[in-house]
Image (cartoon, rainbow, N blue to C red):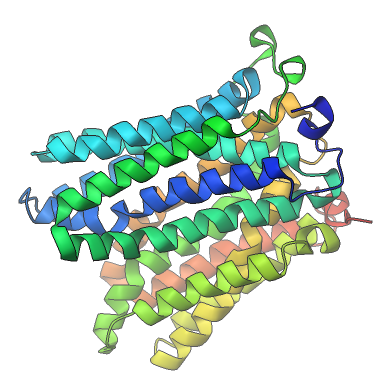
Length: 397
């Protein structure tokens, strides 16, 4: 990969290199998504774990991902993006295969920690590669498309896992996840490097693990992801409380809205401006959460889900595009690593803190509080006189 392509100066986006990175992201997250439905059941079933054990096993993933993500950003700037994809996928191979011998909660926690590490390394490498390959005026589009590959993988993985479990049990799920992860290693191996050696960060030039340019975007990502923690954690429980016949339709609608809008309007962050779009998206997220909290009914949840999904569709791509504006290639990995670690913070804190609130006030209040958090982020971006007023005016033109 030439320096020109690595620096994103070619006006084309859907190049073989970009498609190759997208394919590796898709395959990696198909395997990753297979653990979503299987891990809690495996912990409570064959391993005989209680609710505390299930929470420990599921939550351990976020712990290692959160701790490793800042390191991953620096490594991606020093060693390149391709090696991060290969190492991340290889770690997932080891963790997936390790599930075959996980006969205790402690060993399963170890495998989950390894999975979290693999996701942190791979995700940062993939996002940084996407920003390298994208022309400056199409960065938002690139992040929309690469994150769509992620969402598709996470949507396909659970369906595949459910089918395999029904046909052959847990070993089939673990074996399939291992094989698919090996495929992710192979695709990543064939992918070109997007950060040439001449543009890499010198070890002696590296300072802290947290890049200051990623802190404010990270806090805004937290504002957008906070509601997702509440939505996924408490929607099933609220549905049971309301006597609904499951919430699978809402979850499917949410995924379809996010994927469909990111594909159909991939260029919107660049056309409207990433600051303006992310602020508007956070308004939609706040509105969707408020509707679900104020009108906890079948209709209210449907409308809230669609509006909230619309906000989520545009929040992350726009904010990540905003975070790397003007950042040199050898610092993009660190910025992406810092920005995205706040996703783990949100998913770790949101269900825990809002769970305490739900025990006192009920589930609708968790959606209302999440709406307030999203509104705070929207206010930071959209109110006149904010520090990011200039960024809001940036557009493809």
